[in-house]
Length: 70
Image (tube, rainbow, N blue to C red; front, side, top):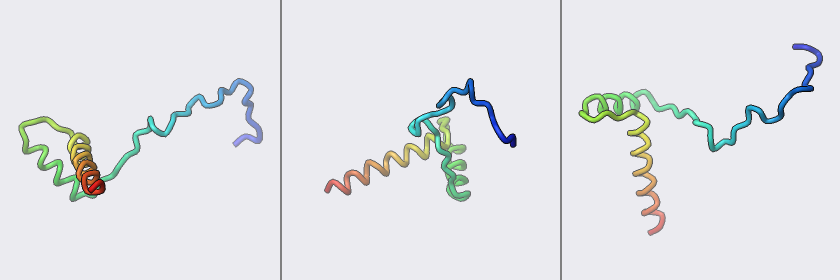
């Protein structure tokens, strides 16, 4: 590294993005991923792994909301 850097023409926040815009990677366990990929490949419809997992999570949220409101 240099001892000093020239920031005369620097633009503050040039690469800043609010956290809401970031896609955070989520890693599935191998057996979970394998299960979904195997089932996706056996269907006639074209679905991505993300679509399936998001759909299941949304259903889980709906169920949880019903349980916690009761």
